[in-house]
Image (cartoon, helix red, strand yellow):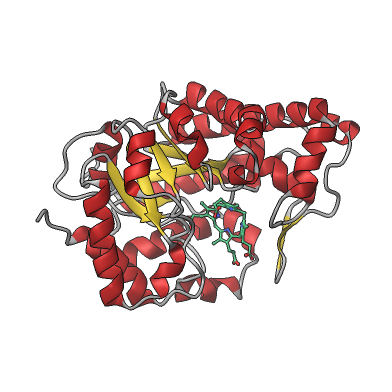
Length: 342
Ligand code: CP3
């Protein structure tokens, strides 16, 4: 049994004294101990070395009273396992030398045996669960098929993802073949994470908001929903679609346990679109963590009051930024932990 099960209670829709809190990208660059490790090992070496990955996962947990840990890894380990050699380049971010551009390229993409190619992630889970000692749940994650496709086609980050979008519009057959291969790999990958002992899985559709509501229903949601259908009998599935408020009603009809929302939607509208029945996660503007600790405390308290303490997981509306002062992140977490009904 997990000692602090606030996060799981929120996913089950149970009454809680206060909402649970964790931060997207909490195991990352805003921590000085993470930056120190950066000088020694490159990014994917840290992902591929279970001892390092589990240590990084624990960094924010040792510093703050968080209610969940998220395994340190990256969404791009999945396309790497499928044969795409993503690197993490300084000043660029994710980088793929030969992006996918044709149907033939897609046909050459493999659906790998996840134990052979991603065993290091499962080993990292085992080590991390040992270190967590049943104190808080561990969250596993994957990128959505659409978000992974974006990186595979563009070969790097983008603001509008127009290369990825036009690939899909010009070559729908190739796009759907690639999306299905990513989906099949992701389902096998997440199932194995659950077998290894994660308490929930989160699907990051970070670039779903680049699609129109109509195209979202063609190129993103059906594939996410395949993952939800496959995993929901085994564990809690949380879907975070950045900029995807337009899909909340549709997502609510699925078997997700919770939906993540970003800061461009009010708590009231998010509640309305999700029938007041769904557990919601979010949605503090990550840049707002540059405000003073006093302002952060006030704004977080108001955010909880507006979402309501039940069926709610306090979080940011996207990943924490690298330059956030430690005491500001602490103010965010403390404001949730110390929250009292008025
Ligand atoms: O919460 C956590 O810290 C867990 C680990 C985690 C990372 N990436 C570590 C990481 C998670 C959950 C991710 C997911 C991820 N990776 C997403 C989806 C979430 C989101 O933020 O939208 C995406 C789109 C990626 C792809 C990716 N990886 C990007 C765009 C970058 C940043 C590149 C840059 O230089 O700005 C990464 C690198 C990355 N992933 C870092 C971390 C801690 C930074 C690595 C470093 O600079 O040392």
